[in-house]
Length: 324
Image (cartoon, rainbow, N blue to C red; front, side, top):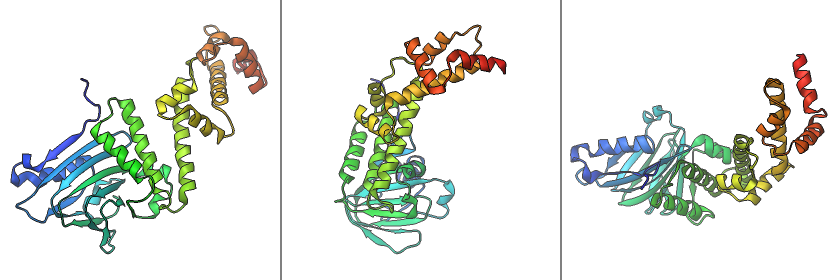
């Protein structure tokens, strides 16, 4: 059986000599989640079980079981330069203070989202489980553009879309993606769901966040198309499948730009052919060859579309290029 490309990493303090337990915990968290300092309430009874899976896009999906303790991201730890958001869901109430503010209560099941670029501290007085997502700040901001206006957010457990995000993260923990491609798609889904959950909490509102999600997705779709342009069989179904979305959603993305999937592909192929006509040696590369290399399967339709777009024939463009 092939191993997952991004396996789940685990640490249990009971597997580590007592004197070294906290050193192992700090190292594990720093490598997989972010720089944090922990101080157990009972130094003689440290029980911490952690798991973390690092996925593409700077995403970490994890879970931990913790004994009562205090924790902090101190000013000294900020020197690690991390620019992530730490998202946690505790199964018990706990308290947190962010950026020098007062301690506030975060109820069991609520989401805490905090910027790792600021100091924060927390106190959990009971043994508890914690679901963790570590999200790249830049990628999250591309979907929720004004998220950085606040250093932290507390999102109630009853909020719409939270169950989708937590359920998807749980599925990934139980069934790690089996390929790099699947891991990339899963990571994008987590970011999309995180941005969807933030609707109504990030200043700017759901409409702006939705537009940002669509814009980011359209960029990925266009990048996919450009990489596959020479393939004459390039179709919307294959692009949608690689991106983990539906063909209809792909069409809607292009409708926001007042075009269609087919028109975008045709125009990009024509632009590619135009560049090749100017750059390739006419003695060794015919216009027919260029048409096929650009992804066209019919030379007649290529010539007709080319002239309509550039108001010149491929031969005229090549002749002008030869003149210098």
